[in-house]
Length: 346
Ligand code: NAD
Ligand code: IPM
Ligand code: MN
Image (tube, rainbow, N blue to C red; front, side):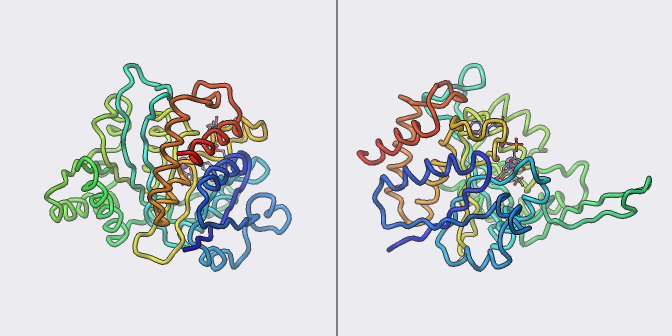
């Protein structure tokens, strides 16, 4: 069946890594077409909005979205991100953000002793600290106040924790749930209660409840002790940048925003941002974007092609060429070419 993928290459290094991800998927010779949506900061400067008003209806016509990154120094980040990425995740109700963190052979470890890193983060993706509820009063006065409200719903918490348990059943059978239910008395306490309820329905999976500060330390001190981690939107965001570094760096990490069982097109993107400090130089690591494309193929029912692409990515991680952030000297395009070549012949 023909698949139609919308591409939001976005800003900065986004288009650079998305070009390589497309190249590697094209090498697999699938029945899949790309459709560029020229949304992002250039669109904002031209039209006063990051994407058109009917953007959600537009993307609903596709089977998936491949996204690069959004954000540019010329526009405040809360405008760009609340103008594109967050409305997509929320508007399509893509409630789970999957972020695998695996240290591949050949990728230098940042930790002594090269511990095994193989975790799967399941990040709540539509509410929590990112609900967008809040406001400012007394603006520009001495007594100005900014209020940012976390919203945790029982249904929203339950669906993401239940999904984490289902995923853990196919892995090593441990779910670590991150909260801060000692200092925060409401939302995270509800989260903990729901986690215990879901755990009771999955006697084959072990639940660990860990406070997020201790979990951040444990990720560095003993990463191999972690299997599936389920976390709120903000905690999942912070922990997955740590996880990215544990798997070699920001350029390595992949993500999928999904809503299993719904008709919404899932969104696949690297974990990193638009990397303005290196954008335009052709040196960004495309592996996180390519890994995200492999997640996309799996979700689209192309499991075999997905595995072929992952095998190609793993071979190039092992043998090179690699970009500077993971110990090589190659350009973004050279890495993409090498993975495409391996995928074509794999
Ligand atoms: P960032 O992830 O863009 O960069 C952090 C560091 O990681 C930088 O030193 C960068 O050079 C490095 N890095 C990132 N991607 C890399 C790659 N592919 N290869 C090698 N090195 C890489 O985070 P930031 O600097 O905090 O944010 C920059 C902009 O991106 C901001 O506007 C932010 O809001 C936005 N952002 C967007 C997304 C997204 O669209 N999904 C995600 C994170 C940040
Ligand atoms: C990510 C990013 C986004 C997030 C930002 C850019 C809004 O950091 O996907 O990790 O916090 O979700
Ligand atoms: Mn992030």
